Image (cartoon, rainbow, N blue to C red):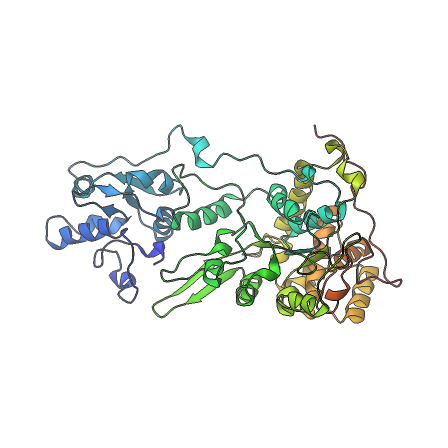
Length: 496
């Protein structure tokens, strides 16, 4: 059950009616400490009143020792939000609970210590993390760097755009064209999580017992890459004991689905609602659960089952019906929820032999992305739940997405010529706004709009015409302006 429901024993809370959870099935050993204290209070061996000031969680051994449990961080957050004085938790979990400010954390090693504190015989001092400030956040690992990827300047520009606005991405291209390398380097150019974002992510990992002995706040954005054999319950959550899935583990981070069409169709289809709403609603016979999943989806796929359809220097052995069947596994509605759909091509030889110093680094991209996100934070400062352009609801688009006349004309031509859906129209506008934020434009200019349109190279009508050898974007014709080259066509100046 959700750890936020762990509370003082029934009848000892400030408002007992709010804590009657008989209709929710109890699972796990975390209730053993509060049950034991409730039994002692019911037997008049201790007063009930002190129990109303705390939330309790802990597993008891047969000899009364309090053993560590999962989900202490959500328990501490629930205590803070519910107005309790603090939490009483196993000593091994105290550092995790102390990540939440504004509450007292009582660390107990055995049942006797808990009873002595509640009866006033031997009060426990509040647990603090004195002289342990560095442990409040995990040591940042050296991320994979964009400079490791040779060439592919257009794809790097697209991923920079995705990072700037929090947009979903689909990369389609032959094996060895850098799809996976680029996806794994995306977290390295994303902005640092805020404290509240880090707390939300850490809560999810706490519930699943994935924090480890360090029990520190997670500062790095998650990167999850489940295998294509995963079940729908493994992806979105659920199972016999309801628990978060890979989508929630990637909350505020990147969910990378390699070999996208190889995932079972029912697994892919369950992505549609979470990608749109940023949360997962699971209905079971005994309970309804909502898990957060505000993720950036990055998907990668080959152009055909063998991987070499329309790739120069390679022969594709796939029949057309097999290619069609392969592409049809990704439905139109799901494809419509992906903002950037790009084709990759094999890296040319002169890029392979190029000096690493010629490639922009993570620091270059992250500086530009941080500046774009700062503009968005200011833009949405009065809009709760909206932190980046990709999260902007339709009702706000007329206020913030203001294209120039030439940019609007460009978008209208693309919508009419390629029969783009209303959702595709809105996503292009959001992409264009992200491009304007990157370049510091006050409104969406024509160059922002054309680049945004060029980032939608794939749709259901042109799968079999995918060009992987560097031709123009599929939307483009002579009546639409070509986007200018990436702003960093020449290497950026050396980092100070």
